[in-house]
Amino acid sequence: MKNALLIFLMMVVTFGVRYPVLALVGRYELPAPLVRALRFVPVAVLSALCAPMILLPDGTWDLSLANAHLVASVVSIVVAWKSRHLLLTIVAGLLVFALLRISGLG
Image (cartoon, rainbow, N blue to C red):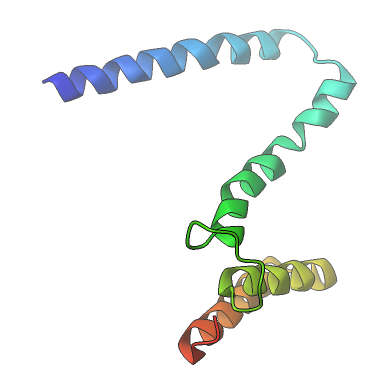
């Protein structure tokens, strides 16, 4: 019962914090600079989530070629930049990562 109450209260707090902002944005037009800045939020969040996993795979900095996460990420970035093809980018990154891990190089 305590878990259900805790989940309900977390839902109320989350909803209470987010709903007023969404309700106001629907009624008023945001300034153009703010709209431009908000376009970068998904990229910033994704970078913040991925960077520690790539650069600190074992909890310590690893910027060597032995870091399979880093090498596969660089390959993925290059493939995405050159091809602009999402599926190809994902397959290339996963293939490089798997090959490095299987071969014992990463």
